[in-house]
Image 1: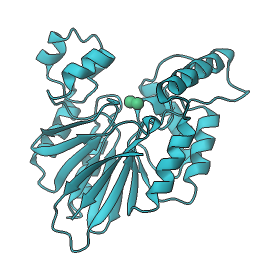
Image 2 (image 1 turned 60 degrees about the vertical axis):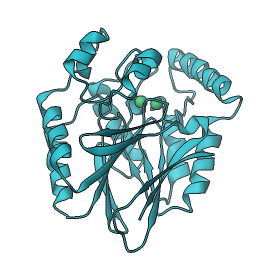
Image 3 (image 1 turned 135 degrees about the vertical axis):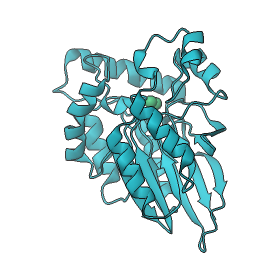
Image 4 (image 1 turned 90 degrees about the vertical axis):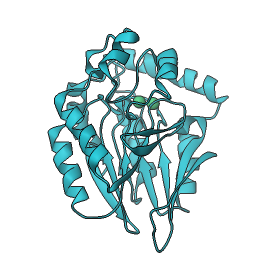
Length: 279
Ligand SMILES: [Fe+2]
Ligand SMILES: [Fe+2]
C-alpha cells in the first residue's frame, strides 16, 4: 500500500501509531436490491475496477486491515461503503469483526443507488441499519489510546450540530490532547480550486460565502450554518485539539486551518492509507 506518513510531537512518554483508512467505496449489491440499484452497483464497480487496474475494493480493504495489526489504533474517516446495501454492510461487519476502531460517516455511507442521493433523511434512516451491523457511533465517537484522545465527528453534510459541539467540549474536559477525525476537511484555499475542478464543489466545511459565490456553488448546504460556525470557532480556540485528519477529496492535501495542521487522506480503494506517528 501507499502509506502517507504524518508525525506529530505531543511529548508522549511512549510513541503511538495510528492508521487512518477512508474512501474504500464498497459497491456490491444483493439479490433483494432493486433493478436500478443493481445496475448502478454494476456500473460503479466497473468504474472502480477500471480506475484501479482490476484490484477490488475488498482486496484493498483487506490489505489495509492486515496492515492495521501493526498499529495502536485504526480510524475510518468515511465512505467505506459507496452505498449502504446489505451486501456492503455485511462485508464490512465481517471484515471488522473483533477489531477496535473509530468510524465516522462519509456522505457515501448513506448514499442510495435507488435515489442517487444522500441527504439528512437518508443519514437518519441508514444510521439504524449501520448500527445493526457495526458496533460504533458514526455520528460522534472517541477512543483514548496511549494518552491521546481520538475524536471522530460526522460532518458529511458539510455541517456540525450543537450536540456534536457539546460532545467535543465533554471530550476536551478529559484533558488529553485531541486528534480530530472528519470526513469533509475544513476549508483551506490549498485544495478548493482542485476540488471544484474534480468535483464541482468546495468539498469542505466552512467555505466562506465569497468563495462559494466565486465558484458559482449551487448547493445551499455548503454554506456554513450558525451551529457549524460555533463548532469551527471552538476548534480554533481549544488548545487541546492538536490536528485534523479528513478525507472525501480523493486527493491528499496538507494545510493549516483554524490554527491547526490538517491532513487529507487518499482513498483506500486506490491502495492508500495514512500513518500518524505521535511522539
Ligand atoms: Fe469518497
Ligand atoms: Fe465523501
